[in-house]
Image 1 (cartoon, rainbow, N blue to C red):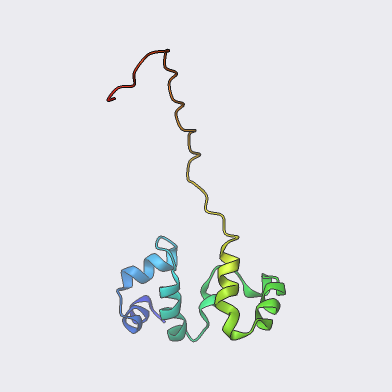
Image 2: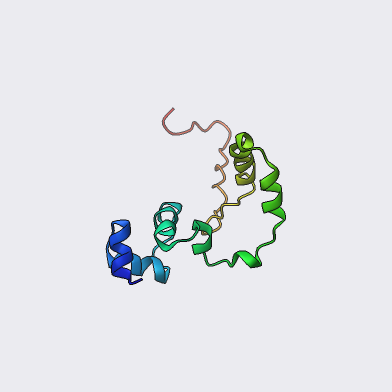
Length: 107
């Protein structure tokens, strides 16, 4: 399937498909859900990770979780995600020591 045909099928432009394919634009869940059915696959199979290379432990555990508790399980798992600050933050400035009897400005 050409990029133009795929773009038409999901309601976007060939340029956007090119950006998604090259990785210059992030492949969000929105795009995964739009593209997968058109390509005849599942959203997870569009990711760069080969499903055959992924440990099945978590998938087996997930399959055992009742449908009505999966939102809760997902929330718990998300607490393990670590968001990294792009640059280490500097410690806050220390307050300057005042001399005895000195009044702070603005008081």
